[in-house]
Length: 218
Image 1 (tube, one colour):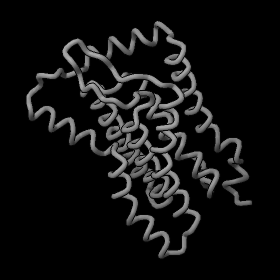
Image 2: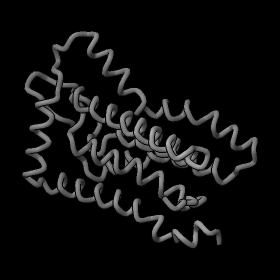
Image 3: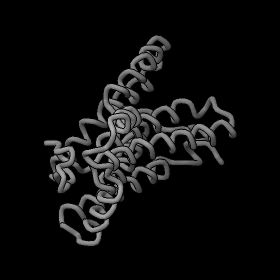
């Protein structure tokens, strides 16, 4: 057992995972049970942020570009060369958890969508009218997974200052992608929040199970 493992046993390292899971469960139960305050908040935020069906073409293009980092194909393109390098370096466990993390988050998110069964936001003027389900946001969970995976990989090689700046950058990217989902009118606020929580929690769970995270003292 390493010093880091003695200081941070597995139970402690899974606390962030439990916190993220609690957020997803509470929001999911609220949606499934039709909890009025949550649904009213979702409706209010959706109406306030939706840019409308008659938005200028350049706004639509900009939003699609900003939301693209949450796509599955983006995660695959970013991490495929990373996995190849890890395999060439014989870092088998790291290659496994990176692969499971970036591929599995989409599958797991889809499973939760089917379980909760929430339909997309509905707008009087039409809206996006996507046929897929809404809770949680796949783009939000995807970008949260991408950023968390990248930070976990890079963390041991970053200085304390670099850790702060890269974490801040990651938070901004995650926030931008989640916000675009509401601006496009394809997700509610709680869809996005649950997606963020699930993406982070899923990644940390996979790391802890496959390899473990060697946490350091602050």
